[in-house]
Every structure is written in C-alpha cells, then in structure tokens.
Length: 512
Image (cartoon, rainbow, N blue to C red; front, side, top):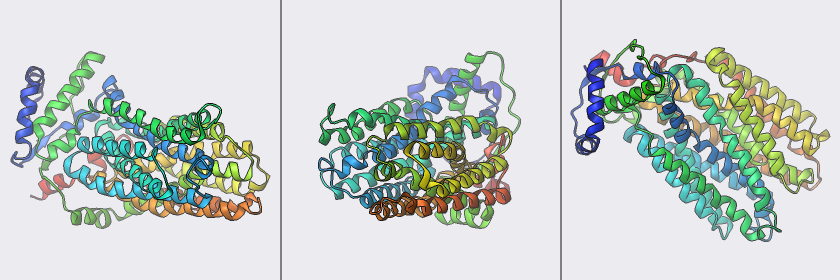
C-alpha cells in the first residue's frame, strides 16, 4: 500500500523543502527501483478534482501544439501559388499535393516511432523531444532551396507533430478529471483551427510583395511558426510526468508527490476539503511492455474497438487532408482568388467554434450518440456540396465548408479522444500512434494525392466539378465511420480510464 491520506499532506510539505534533494535522489534511483505489486488511489484522486488553474496550465502547455499543426497545414495551403512561382520552388499543383502527402507520411512515421517510446520512457520526455523535432523541421523548411530539400523538411516537421499526437493525447487524458475529459480533449484537438486561422491571416501581409519581397515572404511564414513553438516549450517545462505512468513503472513515490502537490494547489484555489477518493487499483509494476503483448491486446482483446478507431480515423483523415490541404489551391485554380487567407480563416474559425460548441455534449449526451451524429451529418452535407459544386462561388464554397466542418470538427477530434481512452494505459500512446498512422496513411496520404491530381486534371478545362469525386469519397467514409460508431461505440463519458479499459498491470496483479 502507498501512504495514507493523512501522511500524504505531510509528505508534500516536506517535499517543498527538500525538492532538489528529492529530484537528485529520484534521478539516481528511478531506473533501479524494485518492481512490486502495489495498491494506489492515484487515478481516483485525479478524477475527483474540481477544475482549477493547474488544469488550465496543462491545457496551455500541452494542448496548444495543435495550433502549431493548424499553422503548418494552413501556411502550406496558402503558399501554393508562392511556392509554385518564380520566387518559390517551381512546384506544380501535383507537387503541392505530393508535399502534403510527404508531410502526412512523416506524421505517421513519427507517431509510430515516438508512440512506443512514449509508453516506454514516459509522457514528459517525449512531449519535449517531439516538440524539439518540430521546431528544427519548421525552421529548416524556411531555408528550402529545391523541391527535394523541401520535401525532406516537410517529412521531418511531420515527424515531430505526429509524435506529439501520441505523447500529448496520452498525457492530457491521464491528467484531466474524468468528467471533463471529453470536452477538454475535443477542445484541445479543435484548437488546431486557431492555428489555421492565424496561419491564414499571417500569410496575407507576408505574401504581399509590396510589404515583403516575394522570395522572403513564404520563408518567413515557416520561420515564424517556430516562435510559437518556443513559447509552448517554455510553458511545457512546468507540466509534470503522468502520475498514472509513474506508479505503473515503479516510481510510485514520485507519483504520490506530484498528485499531492496538485491537490494542494487545487485546495489553495478553491478552499475547503477535497472529497475522499472512491476507488483504488492494484497493479503489478513493470518497466516495459512487448509489442507482441500490445498487438494481442489491440487485436485479440479489443477487436470491436479496433474496428471503431480505424473507421473513425480513416474517415476524418481523408475528409480533412483531402479538402483542407488543397482548399487554397482550389480557390486559386478555379475561382480566381489571389489571396486565400480570409477564406481559410473563416473556414478555420467555424471549425474551432464547432469543437467549442459541441464538445460539452460528448460528456453529457454521450460519446456514441455524438460521434455517430457528427460523422453522418457532416458526410451528408459534404455530399450535397459535391452535387452543387459547379454552381458555387469562392464565397459560397467557403460557406459550405464552414457548415460542413462546424459539425465535422468535433467528430474528427473525437477520433483522438476515442483512441486515447478505450485501450489499456500501458498501450495508450502506441494505440493512438497506430490508429493515427493507419487511418492517416489510408485517408491522409491518398487524399492530398488524389485531390492534387484531380485539380491538375480539371484545371485544363477550368471545370471545378472535376474534383467532386473527392467530395463523394470523403462523404462516404465519414458516413461509414458514423454507422460503425452506432454499433461499436464505447460509452466512456465521465468514466475513469481504468474503468473503460483495465490496465494490463492490473490484469497481471489480478491473475497473479
């Protein structure tokens, strides 16, 4: 057993006076600490906390990385003409689609690589490392001198952000109380669109040759993304390791100290006493878990949940990567738009407002109903947009996109929420990475390539209806994902992660 409640408070006060000594001690002993079977109430203590300033720090420190991803994708979409021009890299529309596919391929590779490292070495080490990889990639992209170098840097940048999805989603879900987990996860994933709006508006002055030389403007767009990344890195230093990860990996004392410190901060803000934790869990500690055990867990123990996640990720990945990666190119090629920043900013704001407005319903109405509704409704609306595509102007196409993706945004975000909460804790980051990589490889790589080819083929005739087939495919995949969720969805709202999926270490302790 771990410390009793009364002993925890004393331990926390002592920890404040000898924090440096403790950290030195933990650094020297954490890798050699003996593994035991322990009983702990750490998950219940985290889940029963009221919302506090500390939780907002977690949201800012971890969640704002999605703003970076939105910034990256939007900048590339808006820079299509600049990169294709004489002051750019001489790319074609098909090359722009290829660059998007290379970026997504890097994201898949980074997710798989860093996902398994996150489960093995901890959330904090990896969400620092993956952000550093992103920063290096996006800065180096600004110095692109030829298409091959540009593709390589897009791959590296994608690696960093793909790794972020696994590391950050794991940490967020393990630190946020159960009753807020759905709305916060969807809001954080939806913050991607704040970056998209910012990126769209940022390109307006930077791509104005009267303000910034043409050869320099598009390069500054990439370099300025690193500024936001450095700010996030500064905040992220204060985010602790996941206490859930710590006690499973033989570092229960460190887990206790972190949770006690969080409790004291919450009490200082709200006053009064916290409710007593209502559950505990017994686990057999472990250092690592084999990939074979992960595979058995995902495919043998949870086959229905595996099918659910694949359907959700493939649908949303194709929809977003196909439509949004090439939206700017579509406006410029067929509808005579020179500056796409305002159009994409409006589209992005609608996406964020959708996540903000619909996110709380995933905790109140429930996961299954909301996932099914957002996927099916957005798919039907996209199919309608494809049918009337030939009659749309730049503004009406943007309006259609705003309506479709107001609904789709919450649904797409729920894919990450679902994968991060319905599998055992020891497999969480790798499961997120796996479904992200497979879904994105099927939908996210094929989507930009298909749309790039469709745009290039239809541009010779100037007939925008030539790209409608891409809309129909995206609509079918989204509707299919919603139907799958109706039958295979998991009602995880307001439930502890350990209740939704029993940790493998708890299974080992019970069987032992």
